[in-house]
Amino acid sequence: MKTLAAVALGVVVVSGSMLAASRGPGAPDPSSFPAAAQSALPAVAFTHVNVVPMDSERVLRDQTVLVEQGRIRALGSADEVQVPAGVTTVDGSGKYLMPGLAEMHGHMPGGDVEEMVMFLYVANGVTTVRGMLGLDGHMELRRKANAGEIVAPTLYLAGPSFNDNSVSSPEQAAQKVRTQKDQGWDLLKIHPGLTVPEYDAMAITAHEVGIRFGGHVPADVGLEHAIQMGQETFDHLDGFIEYLDAFDEPIDRGSLEELVTMVKGAGAWVVPTLVLWDVGIIGRGNAQALAARPEMRYWPKRNIPGVLEGVEGWIRRHAGAAQRAQADPGAADLWASNRLEVLKALSDGGVGILMGTDSPQIFSVPGFSLHREMRAMAEAGMSPYEILVSGTRAVGEYFRRSDTFGTVAVGRRADLILLNANPLDDIGNVADRAGVMVRGRWFSGAYIQERLDEIARRFATD
Image (cartoon, rainbow, N blue to C red):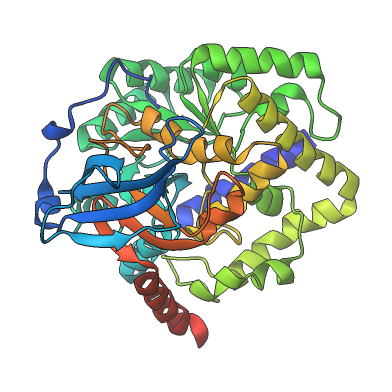
C-alpha cells in the first residue's frame, strides 16, 4: 500500500501544475494596513443580527455591526450602537453573522477564467485563500485581488514548487528559497521528490531569510524529520498514515498519541483535504455520480488547455484510483477511516487544524468543495464549532503577522458571512447564505446567485 500511496501522490503533483509561521508575538495595528481601494467603500451596518464571533463557542444576540473602510469599527447591542446617517444597512433579524472562511490549500488558474474562479470562492463565503502553487501571473492576480480591483478573496501565495524536477542540489534549493523570498511570495510549497540534503538546505535557508514553508513530506525526508526542521503545515495529512504504517492496518493508538504530542509540541498545523484524498487518491466514489453533483454546473465539462481541467478530465483521472479501490474496497475503506481517526486525534489533542480542499481538483469545485470538506470533518467527529475554528480563527492565528481577521471583533478585517441559520447547531447551515462581505464589500445572496447563474449558462453548452 505504501507503493500505491507514492503513485497516488504523483496525481496531486501533476494536477497542481495544470492549473505558517510561528504564532508571532502580538497582532499588528490595523491602522498600519494600507487602505488601498477600501477607503472608497460605503459604510455598511448589519442591524439586529445574531453574531457568531468565533472567539469562543457563543452567540451574541441582537447586535449591530458597523463596517467602515474594510474594517469592523463597532460591535454591540442593537439598542446601544448608533448607525450614522447615510450608512447602508443590512437587516440581520433572525440571521447569523460569522467570520468569512478560508481555503488553506487552493489553486488559481490563469487566463480569462481567473476572475470566475475567484468569484466561486467568494460566492461560498471563502474570503481568504492560501494558494499552494505559484504560476506566472499570480503576483498580479494577488495585487488585483487584495486591492479590491476584482471580486476575490484575500490571497496569500506560495511560489513555484520545490520538487525533484525543480531542485537538483542543496545549493540550488537554497538559492531557490532566496529567489522566491526576493520575489515576494508568501511561502514555499514543498512537493515530493526532494532528498534529505536538498530539503534541509531549503529549510535552513527559509529560516534564515524568514519565509515559511509547507505542503507535502518528501518520502526520503519523512514526517518526523520534516517536523524537526520546522515545516509549518502538513497538507493532505501527508506523511501521517505512512508514519503510522496504517494504509491497510488499524492504527496503533499508542503510536498515534505519540505523533499527536510531537506535532503539537512543534506548533505545526495540518490541512486535511479529506474529500479530495478520499475521491482522488484513495479512489472511492462513483465518477458519474460525482460528476452529477449540483456544483458541477459551475465548472467546464471539457479541459481548457493550459488553464483548467474540466469535469471530463476529472472523470478520466478518477478511473485509475477507483480501479485500485475496487480491487480491495476493504483496504480503501480502512485507509479513509484511518485518516478520519488521525484528524480526530489531532483535533482532540490541540493540534492546529486549517481548513482546505486542494480545489480545483478532482470533483472539487472552488468554494463548494469547502462545504463538502466540513461535512467530512463532522464525520471524523469534530463539532461544528471545532470545524468553524479551522476555517476562521485558526487561520487568523496562522496569518497574524500579516493582518487581523478570523473573528468578528472591532478592528478585524471585515470578512463576514451572513447566514439564515445558526452554524453552531449544524455545520450544513454555513451553506445557507444570505450574503458575503469581503474586506468590507457587501454581496447580497441575490447578487451572488445572479453571478452563479451567469457562470452556469457559460458552461451549459460546453
